[in-house]
Length: 163
Image 1: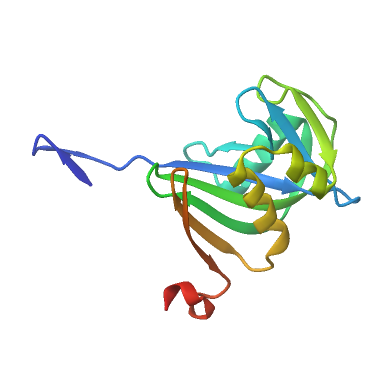
Image 2 (image 1 turned 135 degrees about the vertical axis):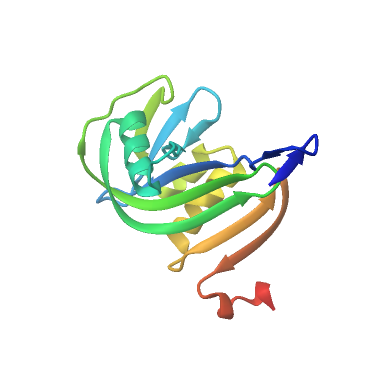
């Protein structure tokens, strides 16, 4: 913990999010179009006392109207400088109907190629690519927009990044 004025201890502040790459039976990705960041996968902040898996199911439902089942935990993108932890899941739709909101002005399923072309934020594209392309769980650490990254995949002892 950090100290302020040598007397009051302040806990570090972290932001934890949960997002899902939702693939339907046609292998299309569920995307939302938000007013601030454009096209992206559904997700958002984990509330206090909420599990990561519950948060991703809730956020997907709130932003799209779609109920999902989690297929697997994919990994974590950590913005070290900003203390933001983006947890990523692979999911599949199990019900619900599209419903837009103030966070999702448009909703749709797109082929992987279409989805990656629609998304303008590089880190959002990378999150999808990692979830789809890697069988093993991953950790990607980076500092803000500096693309200097450390990536760990699979078992730690198998990763050359630790050696």
